Amino acid sequence: MHDVTVESILFSIVPVSLLGAVTGLDMVSFPQMMLSRPLVSATLGGAFVGRPAAGLLIGAVLELIALETLPFGASRYAEWGTAGVVGGVVMAGQPAGAAGALPVAMFTALATAVFSSRSMVWVRTWNAHQARRLRTAIDAGSPAAVDNLQLRGLTMDLVRGFVVTFVALIVLFPLSEEIVAIWGVDAIHSRAVVTALAATVAAGAIWTLTHRAARAGWLFVLGLGAGTALLLLQ
Amino acid sequence: MTAPQLHKWARRDPGTPAPVGKAAIAAAFIRLFAVQGSWNYETMLGNGIAFSMKPLLKDLPEDRYHSAMARQARYFNAHPYLAGVAVGSLARAELDGENPARIERFRTALCGPLGSVGDQLVWAGWLPLCSLIALTTFALGAGPLAVVCIFLGVYNVGHVALRAWGLRVGLRSGMRVAPALANPVFREWPAALARISAVLAGLILPLALQRIIGPGRVLAGGVAVVAVIGAVILARFGARATGWRAALGVLAIFVLYSVAR
Picture: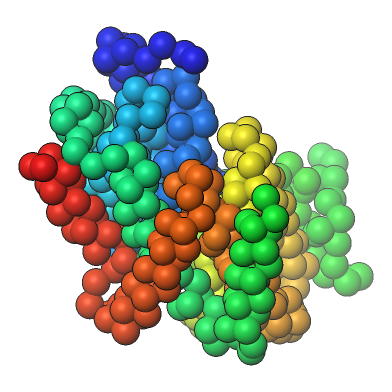
């Protein structure tokens, strides 16, 4: 297994923050190819630390929660690009098999999501301010002003992702190490609590998304039966 | 001076003017991926529409070019993947010299349908389905590279195809784009995608819980029961708190409990 140390995490904090910048930018501004989904961003975060499988595990948990996120226009929602990277790095940065690794990684990812969600509002407000500043030129039909405003917005969103990831890792990674070191619940029950929370949010989201479709409830039960049968056959 | 080489998307009925070159279409298509780059609460993606349309309009006479850019940079809202419909059809209207007042009315009328159709098809349909497909591969034991590649591959086939379709249809149809938005894909697919998602969600729930928790079927069963009860509570009180924020609150209490123990 790849040897993960605090030094290796700190040494790679800037590259990881750049990864957070790219995945954060993907959420809304460019190119919206879903690099920002936690399944991707957390796996990439874990891969940066040398343990992509650990990143995938927390990514899957966060993806269940992210099923709830519908990025409709002006609504406020969690920004999973930076949050996933932070969760993946924190998960992969703990000793393999540490009981508190999964809950602590999920906690840091969700805490980052609160901050990153807020930061998106700041960037959108800043974009509106820039649009007002360039309004005269844009109203005159200046193509350069149109490009200028677009590039300012893209750049600011990239910077936002970098800063959110950098600050979250600086603050939360050392804290997560301290918490994992004194974690008092065994691994299997810790994972069960995390999974129950994620599955609860996912089930609620699936209900919201599908309940208007005819026979969706029965189809869910059908799938549940098939999944349970597969589980018992394993 | 030779006329620009026409792309097949730009072919129109005989007798219609305003050709569009391949390079211009390619540039507009690439710019569409950044259509929300300056998204804000005042003009939303209005500036992005003008930004994406710029390569298509740049061969207009200077006065028409500037007035078109000014018009297209005003408030606009749509689903980003269907913004290409607006960019294509509005560019076609500008190139064909339609009445500016008519273009503005058409532009206003486009906002609602392009937003609601895209939200239902992509955010509430295609994206959750692709997530569930990827989670199913995870639950069945696939590794990180396979899960990520399957998710990104499947999702982006639909994503890029929808953007390309939008620009093509917009450029071809101009202000007669309404029939394209009545395509059965937009009316029937959201419900079909929801039904497939319902089956997949049921399928992965026990398998994913098992893979995350590890050995222990009784515990996984208990977690599944808790999840169903919790989901009912969330659905009942969902308007008061989003699930992920509620999960953060519960998790904070659990972390404090585990540390204080």
